[in-house]
Image (cartoon, rainbow over all chains, first blue to last red; front, side, top):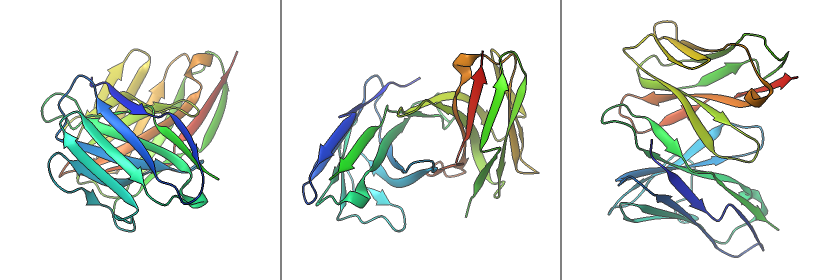
Amino acid sequence: GAVVSQHPSRVICKSGTSVKIECRSLDFQATTMFWYRQFPKQSLMLMATSNEGSKATYEQGVEKDKFLINHASLTLSTLTVTSAHPEDSSFYICSVAGGSLGTGELFFGEGSRLTVL
Amino acid sequence: KQEVTQIPAALSVPEGENLVLNCSFTDSAIYNLQWFRQDPGKGLTSLLLIQSSQREQTSGRLNASLDKSSGRSTLYIAASQPGDSATYLCAALNQAGTALIFGKGTTLSVSS
């Protein structure tokens, strides 16, 4: 399966600052990557679909101006949380569809724990 | 809108027991159903994937079944081990392949 790497794994920032999270597909060229957010004891919630070379598609209720997604290459997508606030503290996970053609199998990064003070 | 429910939310068993985790989904128009494992504070590890046309998949001590008509999937773990302790998530992928909807997971604890 595809190997997905996220960085940083943990980040603590002050309220009002911006934080960038990187998602890399190490052995697979991913035209599409997905960003999820997970609050404690909750499901993973799809935030947006990142498309290489074009604008991301955001799920309903996700502020596109707050969560900036850039997918500049086939191996890298970034999520920037702008003007972060404590309520943005969460576990952010990216995934790529790296299975055999047509299987729709998704592989996930290790996640990034964001804590906003 | 697809909703995925997992029962039970938590499960504690002694080592060696066989167990079943349940997953139900409201919209049967799925592309596939996937089972994942998540360790505390970690990302997801893919366990099994069942295509919509399949009935079951097996990997080692794990067996996952899919009954699309009833909107159910089960994950069977044979001869459980302490190392199996984790949260198990099921997720349904829509037919367009654009949205993977997760359940809240079942947290399994296997005691030695």
